[in-house]
Image (cartoon, rainbow, N blue to C red):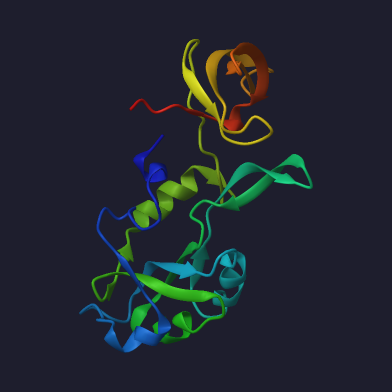
Length: 202
């Protein structure tokens, strides 16, 4: 998996950042080159990414909200779901000097990611790399391949938190068989591959 997908939204540019809000817009420093559109990383309120994307469509040239497939418990049932790849963030293409004020005062926006007091441009190659890994904005992140004997932890579902030993794949590669040690007894369970993670050694 690319290191791009192992990092958070605030570290994908390999620098340290802070988020500057609309109330601090007067403190923002503009780049010497103006009148040109660049990609920037916009921070949103929790679960407002889609709303902000819709609102910004009337203000900026383009937006990009990468998403990923996952599974969530709804009404006690583990169901497929599509969620933001970077929760509370989306990318926007616009001219900083002419559009920043409107962007920062858009409903649902909490700020723009900056290096110091200067909004940080996102290299177009990052946008292209993310887009190349999916279709219609839904990014396909390959799952790690496990081998017999690997120690794994169940991350969701009724067995969440239990650790076990990987035995083999079931139903192709969509499910896995694990040997769990529960109250001193070994028990074999089959869970979705999306519900497990490798146990990190201390």
